[in-house]
Length: 112
Image 1 (cartoon, rainbow, N blue to C red):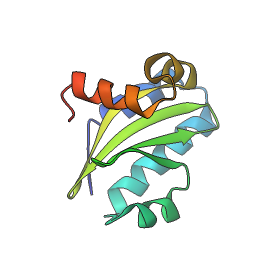
Image 2: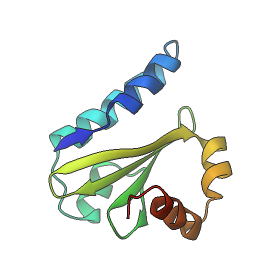
Image 3: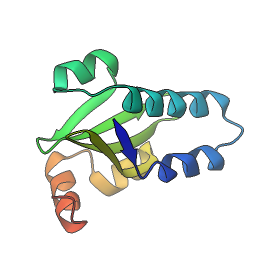
Image 4: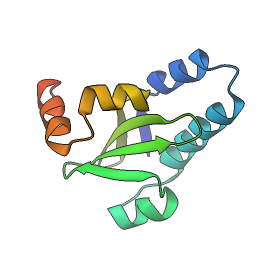
């Protein structure tokens, strides 16, 4: 599967250069996305139990718990796009842990 906007993840890695565990987990996420072609949520959750479906349009949050980092990725056919990256604090501030707020954010940013 092709990962689009990987630069957002690379930027997060550079920003946290000293955090080896976080960088390793980001690399694992990138490798998992690029080496798999998940057909449904069950296949995805078996490989990545930290994936949480937040919109039925193929949007998932990945919780990198080592650093409480949240990554929003859209899966569409054989492509995955990084839509948002941030800390758990930024996630709470932006999305208020609410699927309706997430849907509104996706609409306002032309993802849906």
